[in-house]
Image (tube, rainbow, N blue to C red; front, side, top):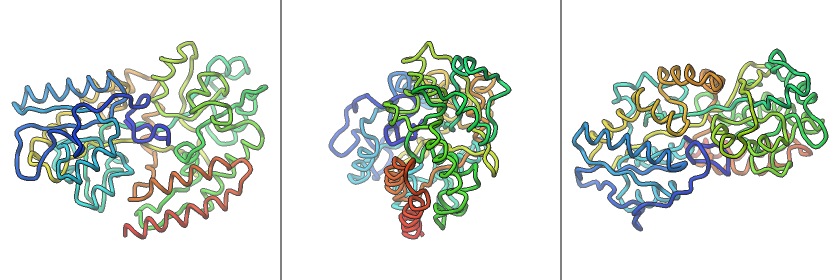
Length: 414
């Protein structure tokens, strides 16, 4: 599962990838597929959040091998994008691998990816918004592996100490601003989040905005809706009721929340593992993000199971992905390392088993995907740098600058 921030981008759900590459050669992947024909063994390259995810994927792939009679090997990347690029350049990519939304278009447009989504017997079982995230030029390229949305995470103790009750959980921007003011005390702010589009951008759809048009042919960064969203966020920061986690001396929103530098934060369900590991005494409640003037809105983050066009074992690779995305396997992954299933029926079961995380799943119905055009990742990186100065900056100027860059990317891909 992708952790959506510059510090955590392109990494699976959990903390940063720390495992070293297993037996990876200079071409990027040892034992990868070659375009000459079937190799008789499926190679799988993943970016792992840790031992739990690695073991779960290895167990699932081993179970498929036993059932199918086809050998398969899982390797863990230390730098997944780099190793995939090396594998493709050497015509020796793995057969199956993780693909993030911001790298999908590039791989699809240069012919590296096999578009197999429509071949899956369970193609209709995934959340539509996730299918959209992995569709390029009307082709459903790859099966969503899992996902998360952003929610509002509330410190139970600080909430109660401020005299707030469940009835006060904010459902609108005005209510969010009010409770943030109530919760602000001394050096502690009511709300904190990372200084990045991957958090601030959640306010855009709440105001009716987006980074690109629905058909992806036009950048819409400098819209009045996005401006309204940035001005709202800026207003809370200038009032002293909201702050970036970095301004509080924390590396990300979860750390600021765990250290009680803030009473609320905006994060995905990956915060659960961090809280359990680092701040087990901090009890919290998750709510859907408050609605803006245009209604509910959040951002979705996900990876898919990519299959190399150069693979000589595409039929077996598709069969493996179909196995990995069954309800049974998705729930096993959820139990093992906390991801939210991308198959709707499995997500329903996940929510039933973990009602405290239901708000993250509810967000899937209206979540907006970050821009996935080839080159968009660089634009977002620049956007994040400019957002660091939002508190005293000019929101319109920031949006205008990013509009120009993203429009160039969109036109290049047209």
